[in-house]
Image (tube, rainbow, N blue to C red; front, side, top):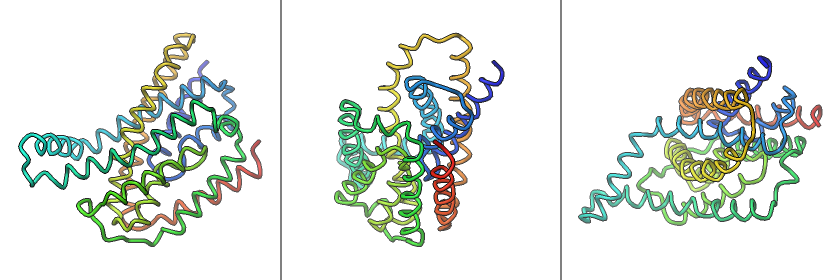
Length: 274
């Protein structure tokens, strides 16, 4: 039982760390579930992904709490009294909402039709998508951009939202795809980072709510529920520190680290895992 507990904690840490960097946390969860041989069925793995994602969500909310509070205050203040000093933040909120819509709609369709179910356990496909992620990161690794948050446009938000749709494919990083989309739209590095992870919040909240049903339907022992809880806790810690480190790497233009990581790990997965 202790070994099972350690495996859950390890997978939670993997999810937490990988959620904050552009290398596909869900893909790594599947890869390392195969490596540690935890032998979860599809439903149990889905619940583990959901509950660790919730831990990551809490970490992102805490790290961006000041931005979130300021944006919410500005949004409601603008619609309450029409003060133009709140206009830019209000537009930013609306662009986040707009950018969420494409992935929200396609995510519901994909879930309803089971579009990617046949790929979710294909670890070699995950490896291939890591190579794709590495290629896209290589293309934009030296981009700097000039747009700050006040220069984001409606078109930018739509295109970044469409890039987030690509992340519905198993093994494609959500943060990686939205950062790539942001950089293609010439957002500066810090603005691209912030927009990507603020965009993560509504999607993650929706995912957590949809996954709650699966969690409630589980018929597991108290021990397994404790394992799930601990995996969520370590995912929270992993995301908190990993995200702070990634921001420094991103702002300093060192995405090449993740290019090499994706290329090496993706190749190893294709060659050695099944």
